[in-house]
Length: 156
Image (cartoon, rainbow, N blue to C red; front, side, top):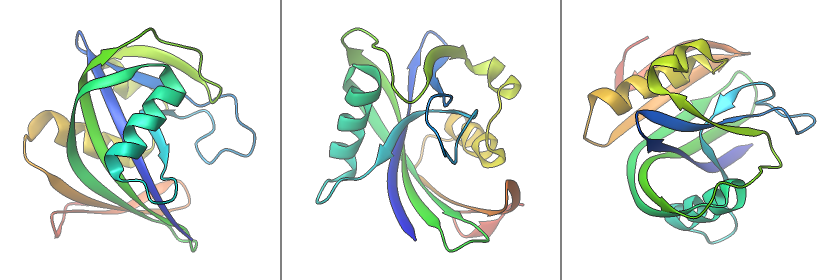
């Protein structure tokens, strides 16, 4: 099964706004910490999906954001995902409750202390080290990252 999603890391004062996924039942991301995002609706562009998902999950309206990379997730099941990865540094509005989990501003240096997918550490490093657009493929067997390919070159 193919999935198309967006994910955004909203930045403020050296922190990312993170969502601790603790509220949904049967959630692939249960107990993990993620950025803000979700699945495309029919005929949406990546930017339309991004803006809608951020508004729905946080109550914020993005005013400054950037498309940073395309992340392809492959698993040992029939599921795979293409994720449009964004960062944002401008928004309006007040942070609202999220029905998928708890929202928290987390200092970037504390990300390593959170329960994340292994591949998230790879793209966090890329977000910090690179200004250019990247393509990253992350291959999982169960919850274990077994392969990573950056711009066509194997890195794990």
